[in-house]
Image (cartoon, rainbow, N blue to C red; front, top):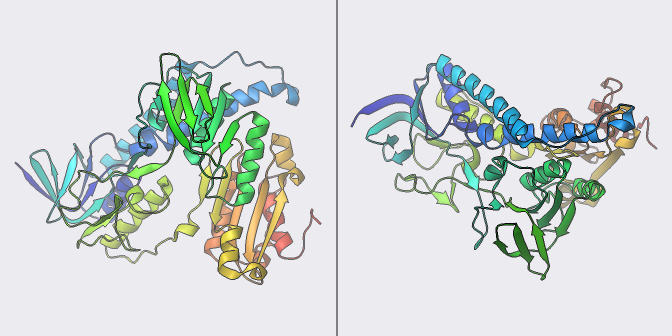
Length: 457
């Protein structure tokens, strides 16, 4: 057995873990980064990057299919699963190589193997131990399933769905949250018949109701079927497909079933509780500065309750590294973290919904405005419908920005600035949005809430 000492030991090389390691090294700390698989974690290898590559390929398929509407002669000959996979894996490989090089240049010691936390700010990997003045827990998350529903064969998780060597002809998606609607969108663009089953009453149920209804309308128009407000009962599979039974007695038959019911914290069997770190339903209990109950042990990313987003993990990793280095970083509230669902159309938001604003300030204390993208020149050019919704406190700041439409994810940073800086629409109204851009739609909403609408009545 060999004992190693570092300033900072990071357990987990995903978004939060490698961000913590990079920033700590930049601040002069000696860092060990322990990862059982590959640097980059779920986001790089099985999540954000490959799924968005899949969605971009889906966008191209739609563009070719609809090319005639733009005066371009083109036809879609089909989907090449082998070529699609090579494209996706090529992007992942390039990003992975870049990350490995960046970590190496920062002088970070990468330890390959499964780590287990032990008392005394120590992580054991095989027969070796790695002790840090500080330890950062960043072990990420896994795909959840439901009782009695075992993934395998034709019952897929998001990870195994990416490994398919065919374009399915039909599928049922169990779960209408971000992962479910993204895969449904991509596969529909590739020609599949898709049905989404969601136990709650709306798709993307954590979003403002205007966005949920907008996405449901768009999916109906695309031919994506939904079963909302009904629960899953059982599933069985054979050599040809899967039969899904719902609690209302309806049966659905498809080539595959995708289980997209959320992700759970990867904390089991890693020694956290034995080392004194408290867990609640599997999540690490940490304060607003991401400190656990054990001195010198921190937690970041999906194992901390809240939004399970890669950019949240990045921010938390940087925050913890700066706190360890003696700086005084400012925590970012969950409501100021932007969210994007990369479906067709996209959904993006930051801040609180209109319903949440009314609950906090009363109906008379809140004003919301919706601007339809039908009035936006660039949206008309690219052929998207949707809306921009801004929620403000009466005579007060912007509380939430909510968008639906193709490419609107690129606009959400302006919304984040407005919400985080507690800007009033009157502060933003004088600012100029370039023409023709989709950002003008957001500008129109701010103008309207400031009492001087330009292209709206």
